[in-house]
Image 1 (cartoon, rainbow, N blue to C red):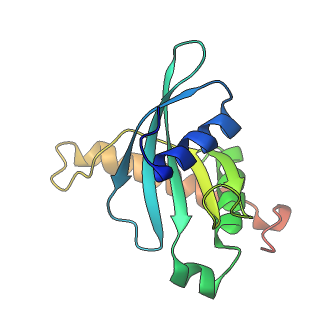
Image 2 (tube, rainbow, N blue to C red; image 1 turned 180 degrees about the horizontal axis):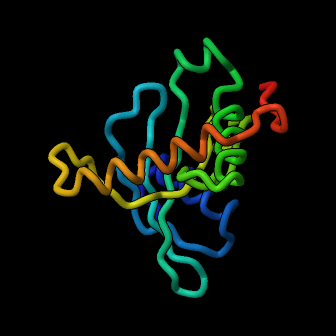
Length: 146
């Protein structure tokens, strides 16, 4: 059960995306320069535990581009549909109905920064594979007008 007005907003978002689910916890994610990021963990009605990230563009970002959240959401939709290694986009609140400003919810992907890679060859191969996929995309067939 939410314990603060902010948690109540995250709980409302969960109800919008996955009705009858229960917010278990939230925690801030560090490192976002253009957006505040919050991770959510919630329990679905079937008992499955899920996680997602809520990205809320900062004021400066929205002043430069009021459509920043919508653009990011659309780009993630395109990239995910192409099979690129990107988080799945789940929900866009461009009007700011839940948080009072635009926000988007995306897939949470487990991981951590690795600065001393034990398997640099594997890492390099994975990165090269993703870059090759990206460079094979025929941009002319995509709606990137945004």
